Length: 380
Image 1 (cartoon, rainbow, N blue to C red):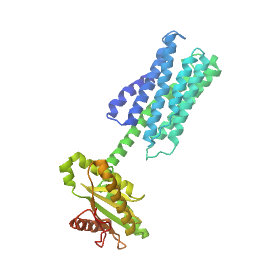
Image 2: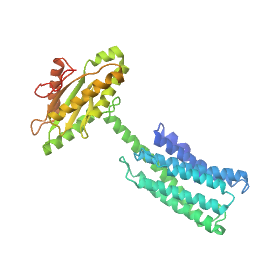
Image 3: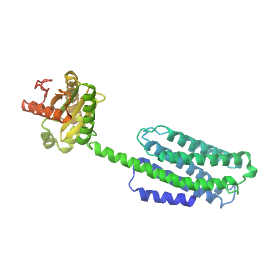
Image 4: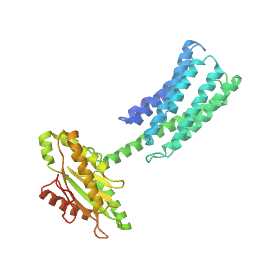
């Protein structure tokens, strides 16, 4: 089992290649556990009870428990949880310290180490059973099964060592619990590696999907994703008959910003506008970068008054903060289109909003026109 774990610890970084934070923590966890078991076996080659035995055994416990704590944080991240459960790491620290202090008492150290390892595994299994924050595959079931099986033999060893020491006087005593541990240990090592690789694959797939839908500079939906979301919202609007508005926004004189302040300043301006849009829209609205310096917003349950209020919020934010944040002023032209017929489409609203936007630019920019060509806001 130890040879298999060491092999896995070496192979995982090679197989997985460039990885993100959770995968890196999982790799570190496997490495620590492999080192822990190797040190535990190595401790059997020195005089029992010697300082070398105490040192190697204590480091082994730190590796095994610390590795599980690292794995626990990786599993939390793969489940989409920003806040990690710190209990497994705390148990690893308490286990190591208590083991070192009580090392001279065999019954205590065996009961202490195996008891806390059982508790640590139980907490990790319980965390995996919680509903994840992102869609995940069946790797959680593999890990929970592995942890429950390991808990069974670990608790068994702890009880024997602590309360029936005569039947389990040494770590390598021929005993059914060690046979069960050997079988379960080898099987769960394989299952755990499969689960880690599946979790890494799931995370990679989610990241590819995110990159396919999110504009890399602004963090808003890209054009394709915005159209998908907007069409879904429009279908709901048509079905239930609630009003929808589409707002097309174009930053004024953006080329002059790039030419006069540099492309980095232009990128910062786009990011600033994206943040202002996220702040100005309401829950349920769909906002995206349509292309270049153009942005689109589909406003659900929105009449002309709602669109006007949104436009006012956005202009106020840009007027109040652009110079302080960017060092130069920003303005935009916009056109608004309202769903006017029962079977209106997103494409039709976009065409009308785009035509209104260009009329706003032709009238001097820095203004928003509604579907009738009336200015909602005075020019800045």
